[in-house]
Image (tube, rainbow, N blue to C red):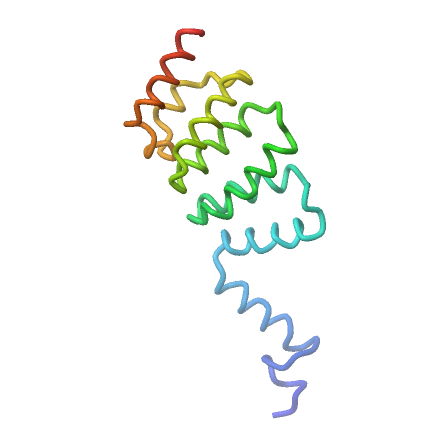
Length: 144
């Protein structure tokens, strides 16, 4: 068979099919993570992509990587209560309880008040039985 007739051969005839096969073996989540990694390699402080990538990494269970991005977002958007809340969630997921409580306190100080979501959020499950967590939530519920 001539190279031009071989669908696996590189070049215009086979390259597209080989790439399609590669992409079909990759989950959409993995594809999105790889894509956003490439974007962040070029623009490391692209806030919208950092937000998406941190969420995707969390969904994939790559919590250590998500913490890195959430810390970067917290540095870039220091006044954003949701960024601090997400950082608290990521820290809780990696077992950094004291840091998670501090990030949650910062979220409350910046105006986070979605207690219904907070109390149901599975990302915070590791903190729920902590006396520090319960005291913090009580404190800010009283403040309104």
